[in-house]
Length: 347
Image (cartoon, rainbow, N blue to C red; front, side):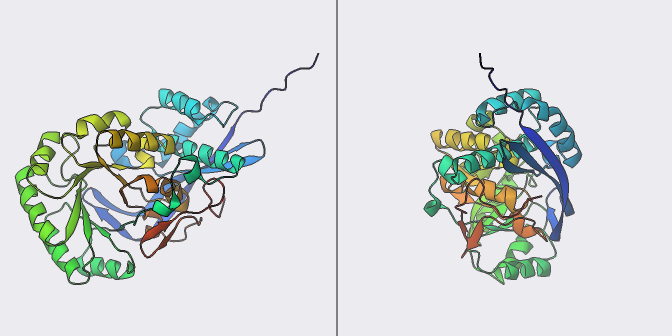
């Protein structure tokens, strides 16, 4: 009688990484000069998969909480990395609000699966790389001459995303228009508080070449956003208000679309589900990111052909990126065709 050979468990390792920013990064909520992320690695059957957590305090996570979360989640991975949906159910049940930590595992699992099957992730998700969109380049709030210099450094991008939400938004836009005429997205990061004032500002910004507005009011103020949307012609996109699939249906009455980020949704699997749900409700999809290495940005980029807009530039905001993956040519995302994530570099 032969004995069935037991499978070995999935091994999970992790390490924190400090990302030094090229410029101080300021949005309506605050300023950063260094971002601490966490890299993950799963190993099973002689194959490794890599992932990244880019936690954000706005969603209740930081690097320390990610490290604690990974300690709790590692024993739940089981012994079969080819079942990412089953693993996701276990991890979400254990830590439902630790989405960046779970995203790092999910990304590593799909990298492992792609390598095992010998195919790039975009093929696993049915995404055509020829349909990868333009990506915007984000310009953080700063003194206007500094913002103008950042824009000069972003030459070649066809769209810029301008962070606003303080009391000098109009001066910022006027200063930007002195150095570029490309279309602009603006992101208030919940920084505006009064819907009527926001309507006036958005109408003025439309005349300045703004084509999209992201999260104008605090996430909970859906009535205020609906007031705005009913009075302006630009698409209004939810970001901080759109974390999970269950958030999307209520947002459809106030927003024109949602910003999907792997790090706030829980990874590739959950992001794909959010995209599908948004589509079913007639909403536009912007695929966004946190400040991440090319590892995390490339993971998101594999889903980008499924989105209407992309803002996948977080790796361009850091110095000494330890990985190489998705490329940007003339403002457009170029997806790697190697197996899994298709990135170069390891840890």
